[in-house]
Length: 264
Image (cartoon, rainbow, N blue to C red; front, side, top):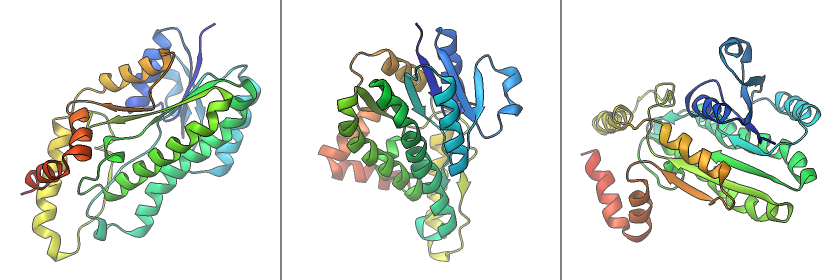
């Protein structure tokens, strides 16, 4: 029997590409979107309504999955967005929304579906984090902080779910060509002291987006995790991702020097 895989944020980006690939491979794919009616007609897999910022939407969605799905094999937490800008210049309401979606939204969806997994005594949770959940580059302080929070939550959760045979993994991509960067919310600079630095760091951020890889690598990594008997917890993906993690951990001066050099 083919696995049933639930993917949040499946109407665009990583989620859409992953959903299409898994559907082609014969998996039973269920995607989510805040406005599924806009996309369902063009998609070969089922798309259900879910707004991860809305508690009622999450509860209603979890009840629907419990009632309509005999066995939920995999949850892929993919929905989220990115805030860019200098930390001091970012309005607090924007910073809070970054956490409401990327961290609390992901946590709430996961917790709402955990009773299904526990009842089954099986399952897998894969969360799309980011390489900035492991490092702290400039211009992405709140996005980075939200992903660090995601990493910490699932690091602990994996031990708590181990008795129920529920596997937990996170995937940490570097820059990839999706709509994440283009749909990012950019804070408006208004502190003159940062004018020169802001211009340089914005250029460096844009360069990373422009030179990004195809997201197929991330889709392939998630697919392999779904098919693995013993999936790894942490999975950096993309050019230099392993080197970035290694340098920060074992050669922090070299790592920090490379960051400073990129915005000089």
